[in-house]
Amino acid sequence: MTIEEATLKTEEMTMNNGETPLFRMSLEEMGRGEQPESKDPFDWGLPGQLSVKDVAIYDKFQKEVEKRGGDFRDTVYSFGECEGEPHTLCRWLRARKFDYNDTIKMVEEATECRSLPKSENYYPDPRACLGVNVGVYIDQYPQLYSGYSKNGSPLFISKPGKLNIASIECATSLSRLLDFHWYVMMHDFGDRLRKKKAEDPDFRKFQCLTVMDLEGLSITQINSKVLGVIKEQAFVDSLCFPETMYKTLVINAPSFFAATWKIIKGFVDPRTAGKIEIISSKSKAHSRLLELVDADQLPSDYGGTDTSTIDTLMVEAVKSTPIEGLKRITSEIISIRSHGSITIELLAGEEMDEIFMEKDPAPFSAFTI
Image 1: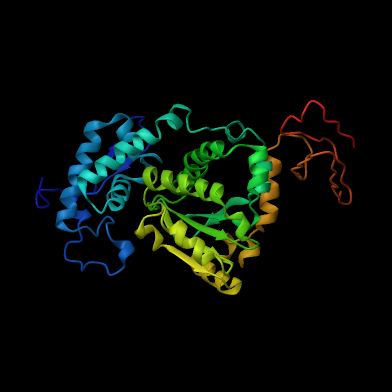
Image 2 (image 1 turned 180 degrees about the vertical axis):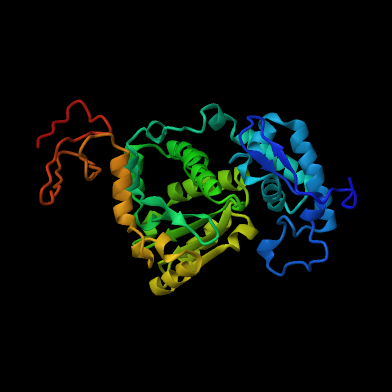
């Protein structure tokens, strides 16, 4: 079908389950027509900005996706059809610079990569896939979703400067972290995208604004195990969830991070790397965040007026532990050769009700309180 033959009317196709229509655009709408090509490199390859050549490739890819169906199509529509056909297909095509054969190969490889997680429904129970209470894991590596950016993208805040890789290895395993990552992408992140879509039918850019807060990061935390986890997760994201990064702000970066960034940069696509901003000044970071996020959506410890990340993390930790009346969780990882102790301070009005051991101690161990 040529562009001239395409209908001008935007189409909708009912999903197989009959719940939500699949948003479609005509081939002519997909092209930029008389509009000049956008000078913003990140606008390239978006619906309404395609060249005549790219429209033809888009049309061919769309037909192949519908022809193959099954797992191949499920991989493309990983977040569901609510994203809409134009933005979904363009995400995959942009990731391979609108090379048809490379895009088909990418979807095939992604289908294989996600076959095992798919058979497990992408690990819907985070406690089960980690093998430890989620609150314990988050306490060793604080990270959370908090509000939305001005363009509708979920805001994700990660604090590698608080990362304790030794504690994480004690509480769970590095291999289980990848299972948890599948849970986060398909259930947590995916649910937030679908929720935003339900609230705003015009929301179509399924992307994420990420803040990587490196405050407190030491060079000893950047070891081969940490880099290995980063590399593995980056591989899954770039292969199975292409073009889902809106922007990433690396803030409070220590002076040695420049060398580390050169290593990490090698794990990501050059176009993706171009979306990453490194900001060392806290005040400049807060100003930049307020350009991207409304104050009421931004945590107070990052320059906004929303609930602080510390309070939100505590609430989420309590929610993940089904104990009636629970107000606060504190976790400690103890490495003992002969003997050791920890002290937990109780606040006014608090009582310590229960102590849980997430990992079985050696049979000769004895504990007293």
